[in-house]
Length: 500
Image (cartoon, rainbow, N blue to C red; front, side, top):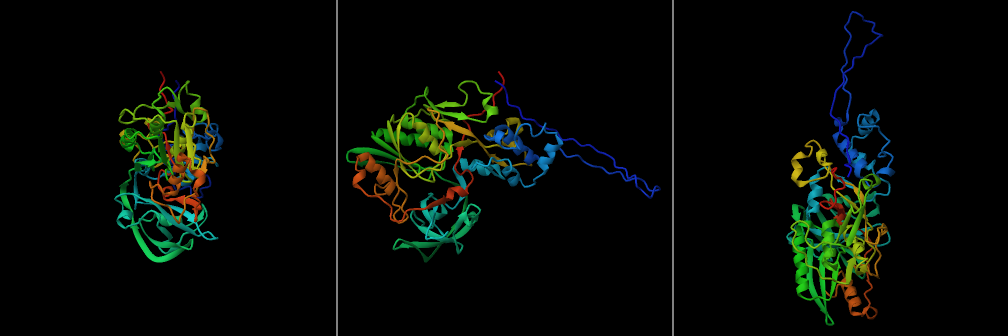
């Protein structure tokens, strides 16, 4: 197997003299001008970004600045000039992105990326959605759920609460470039609350001050229970992020459901923006079976990386154990799965749905998903590890360059070779959330769960669940955090292999 090599450059200095042939004062000594020639090492952040993107980026061949014949090597004067052309790393990175890339991102401190992937963030614990109201561009927020032990929990904020202003400013959205959602970036802000009166969002005189806490940990398993409907036992799991540190707890949840002899399962991914792929494989295996000889996904990288692969490289089958602790996996061996998914459902959540489709009848209740069919990895300035982030090598990361990159590396196909869901996965039973009656999560009367249960019982045609004030979804609070809509291949696939 060929090893994919990245070029590196040691810093060097060259001094030259300049002579003034037009010196009209010959008695004076000529001034010796010492000039330092720049090298790639003078632009460590830009050089790091270029090396990662040229080697690994899914659309590398489609970005003019990244094509392999753009520069001869890292000492090419044109390459040095390119690194020097933009001092702002954010803009430099943007100039390396493909126009159709919606999800690659970066952070000035790689720790922000790593923490978010472990369910840890700076947060006040209020997770919310944003929706239009009225005929203009005004926006209201609706609370989706509250993280236990958070500031929002202590302030009595609840699911279904409505707000229209932040620090006295009406929320609005005209476009991605014209909105005031940066108000949520403050460490502390005041919400102006509202009520729904005659199906109209109506501000009231209540305010709530929320303060973010650094290092707030959220258990992604918000809720698990068994619901009995007309003699059928239905397992229900609300899972809000694919976080590896909770894999063993998730495995126990499936064990508890199996002990209850459930007949059907509802996975609630409505607010799940993704996370670690190994956790997605675990959930899929817990649903379908520990069939380690059956393909769950095949990763497609850029052509340079794919050319180094042998047959079977980049493929991953179902698993019979958790990834980190290698605990034997509990499986339900189901032939049908109900998934609640919405416009906030992305990435690893969509991977579970798509990966199970060839094996299980997946019934999608809700609305069309985000359509993030690409995966990514975390990169840091550690060239000796091919720039891959490794928690055991944090002391090897360049202390002068702490940027972390999360570029898209490829797409995951299912066993049928399908990965084309850029426009999202469409529901089998469509229903938007109702701002007027969001309902209690896990309660049989909550509209989306009620619809899933009605399909299970065969009572769909007999019950109207149409929302009276349907959410006109724009975005959600998780989109303002590092790690939004992530399908993280960390720990699963390293496309670089040593020669054998």
